[in-house]
Length: 295
Image 1 (cartoon, rainbow, N blue to C red):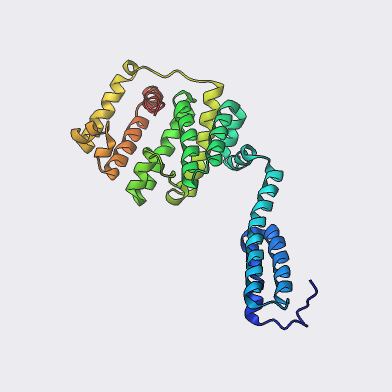
Image 2 (image 1 turned 60 degrees about the horizontal axis):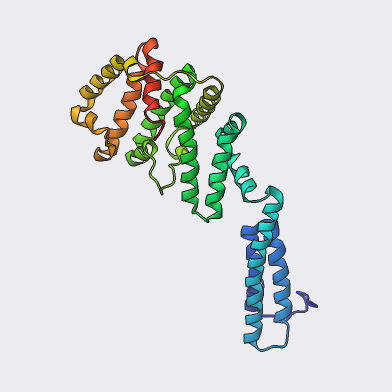
């Protein structure tokens, strides 16, 4: 490759064509720069050859395409060397979530189930939305399982944060609020940071951590319906007064109600439970959250 910028007689468009591989730097960083720079040097050398135009452009085009392919191969090898195989890469990404770190610490078997499920989805080339939904489904299922048996303070805090999230999401987008309450298969989970304040988002993370920790360390008793019947009746009467008997009855099939109404009713339900006397508040919340544990 005996060439220099000072001695060359290439036209500007020949240079432009030859250095196209340098564009890999924009997405490939140092590795992209190495692959793109080498390909550009080869292309400039080829453009100096005394060949007809068509073979020169064809040869340099092949080199440019090859540089992109080589970049992806080298990048994949580099990622594998740094993070290991697909399972290690998935674990690395999952550990960016404080809640997953907590789950991994206090319940390794649950963390392994999440990691294995996501790894399988990645290996099957599922879309980003499908993978995100899978993670949300796994973590959501764990929280639903652990909330009813968490500590008194944790379950109270969880109910309080949930009402704040419902209200803040619903104020911006009723349909997003409905998806928050009833995640839909095939659709990625909503991005909470888009709808709730930073304080609420951070509080949700902290409360979720406490839910998992306390539920595993010291699981509490979940009352039977007979133990909380009067409190449930009181909440039901208040909801009926506020939203009407038909809407309350339709909560068993929320898809038949306007999203804004569903969100308002669920928020009121938890607020009414939180307003109960101390002796009734936690048992009622435990019972309510236990109804969703297998969802």
